[in-house]
Length: 254
Image 1 (cartoon, rainbow, N blue to C red):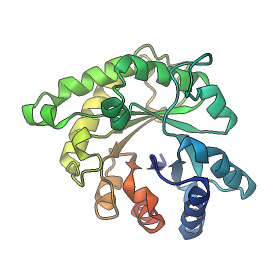
Image 2 (cartoon, rainbow, N blue to C red; image 1 turned 90 degrees about the horizontal axis):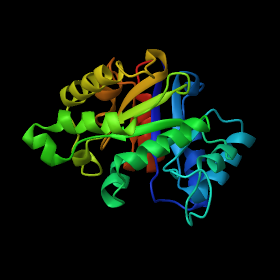
Image 3 (cartoon, rainbow, N blue to C red; image 1 turned 30 degrees about the vertical axis):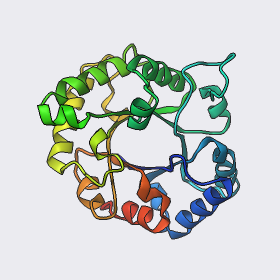
Image 4 (tube, rainbow, N blue to C red; image 1 turned 90 degrees about the vertical axis):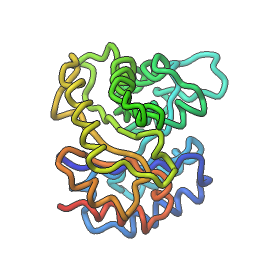
């Protein structure tokens, strides 16, 4: 199974800067690396069309992801962007449940579940994020916290509808802090989550990937990416630097 590496550019770069970064990344990639590793970029909404145009016109094998999606299909929802609109921009993946959406915008599991379903309805692969706060980690209650996120966020999914799914463990205490969960921590949680999801009606081992996100950098990428249980990484700040992002990609032992 291919490893996947997602670069989440968050609220950074205008569309011209985004094109420049895409080109720098593409020029720095080893030949045909995209045939062995799924490389996904997640620009802000205002840059998606520009990035998609370059990918299409230059026939790049890099995939596109949105950073968010509306829980609504259409209607009088000012400022929202629907999964249907994203599909027209040839979006392949969509991030939902990111810790910054949960903590800064108070997104609850019910809303996240709606977003997951909107993406699936439009044949966009959800990148479902979950993870505990420092309080749950210190108190030892993080398994219960995570299990609830999984059960509520992925509620009601059916096997005949879920073609692909990415499940991303991103402990909130490690997002943008420079703190990184140990490999032991990551494997422990992903093993736990795999066990939960294996009992779900939508489970298909070949179509679900389990990845890690949380201050991923060239310094820790090799250990994380070459673990058999971890299928890839969700990269934040380091993905804004072409050299660092490509170094993370090169860390995969092919």
